[in-house]
Image (cartoon, rainbow, N blue to C red; front, side):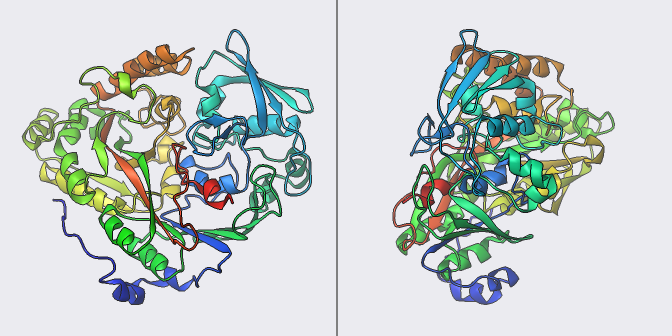
Length: 528
């Protein structure tokens, strides 16, 4: 069920240039001083850090905004050199974080960035209109925020949270990107959404709905100096062959590439970068809390797990560019996982059919399988087609419905509008995954697919979120994660490395992809 045919990109390039379609006709060769990055999707294309998923917003928003807590040059750890906070201290009880801000930072409209802007930004990130990936986590964690002086701000937590600095850093979230209070209060939220202002190295220039977002460099940025490229354009092209053709014809400078094309690109002189375990592939089982849904029955959920040959997909279609596991390998707890907890589900179609029969579905059932382009996973539709084939083989008649991630995600916060569906959701990896687990699998998570179906998991997730130190976090995470895996509230398949090809004239050396969530290293690309 996995197609192992390996086409040569460069052998068919001429044909693709003719047949690629309208996307490629919109772009001409990029000027020498500009950078064009082509991705699978821009999600809902928001320019507001609190109004979209990190999966897509963190691809481009780091160009325009600075975060409260920054990351090091390697993009692997927090830093006091690159964020708005130049220093911080934590109270003895672990519930108050005081941030000391660097002075002299200005927004792109000339306003000074002060503690008032930091408080305003974090208040927006925890406000009623926030729908970003970690909005629910921050709403649960933060009690209130005070401005102590023009360049000092304190964040008071409800409970100690050892991962708070990581959670609000540029390594993980977009919610702590700082926006200008005076500007937004003057022009209103709607105009800010259309004409945003930040303090980053690039200012917003133009948006072409459904296609691209363009940025132009500021003359000087407090952290990186003069940006490397005069303009940066981030383009959404869902079709893989079109993206590959664009970089071959100098109409794109950076694209994600399928694993089967890596050797071709390396052989032909392109810069090829890898982000290990960039995504964790797992099945989202929506509406499992509804009594009339087949997914409400644990046996059905387990049947889905045993129906999918994730090893064949990983080794055949994806050429082994990942790892079979039921845990996030990037999390700090992975090395201390309990014996057997993270072992992959066994591929056993016979057991799957028996479980379906036991659950009252001897003839299977029909279900919609949502498929959507996802940044960093160019083979997404092919993976989904392989999964659907395995499901149909045991009687689960999965009908693939292709759409945009932004439209699908917008339905999640309102369970009544969410059809009874399944989806293979590549979730971005994080160094601390507790916030992701809360968002997807806690009854109060903004993107919850469980909605209280597993009360024990909800209780243990609550304990995990307030772990005061690393050791207790590791133990509590594995307890909560075990609850979810044992009840088959989700089905983990494998990690997947991200692969990116770059024009060597623009990016002759590897840039810092690091471990930053959903970030392809845009700041590193544009730093001289």
